[in-house]
Length: 226
Image (cartoon, rainbow, N blue to C red; front, side, top):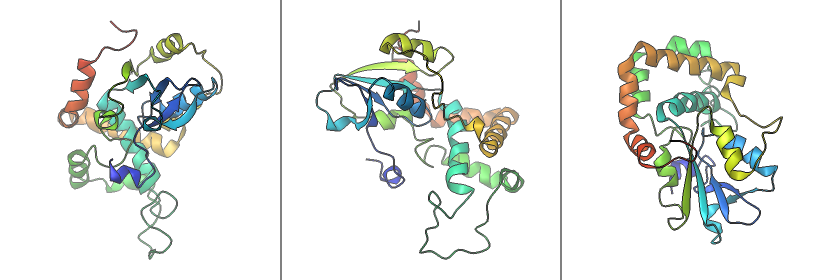
C-alpha cells in the first residue's frame, strides 16, 4: 500500500505493540509517533507491523487537526528531503550526477525563492509529498478492520488522557521529536504559519483538501473528551 511512501521507508500498519500482543498504537507521522514509540518502549511495548499479529484486539489511533499537522509536516518534508538534495534522504543518489545547482537550500534561500507558483504547487499537492502530510484516514484505512479502535485527539490534554488509559507515567527525557528544536525547520514552519494567516483562503483550501480527515475526526468518539 502507498508505494510512494514505502519507497521512503514508511511501513503501512507500523506502530508499537504491547507485551501481551493485544493492543497496538498505530504510527501516524506527525501525530506524536516518535514520542509514543519512546514512551511505550519504556513499558515493554515493541515496534511491530499490525498485520503480522492476529492477536491484536485493539488499535489505538491518534488523530490531529489536519492543517496544524500539515504545517508541521511540510516543514519537516522540506528540511528532510529538499534542503539537501544529495544524501541519505535526498532524491539525488550517489550514482547520479551532482552539479552546482544541488546546493544546500537554507531557510533563508527557501523563503527568498518562494513564489506564487511554488505556493500553488504546495497547496495543489498538499497531501502527496510524503508520509508527514499524507491523509490520516488513508494511513489507517483497512487496517485490521475487525479490531476495536480507540481514538485520541492530539491537543494539550493528550498526555494526561493517554497516561490514564494505558497506565503510563509521564517520564523525563522522552523523545518529543519537535521540529522546533531544529532552527531551520522552525523558521520554515513559522513561514507557513504566517502565510496561512496572511492568506486565510489558503487555510480554507487545505481544509477542503483534507476533507476526509475532518470527516473522520468529526465522526469518531475520542477517549476522555466530551
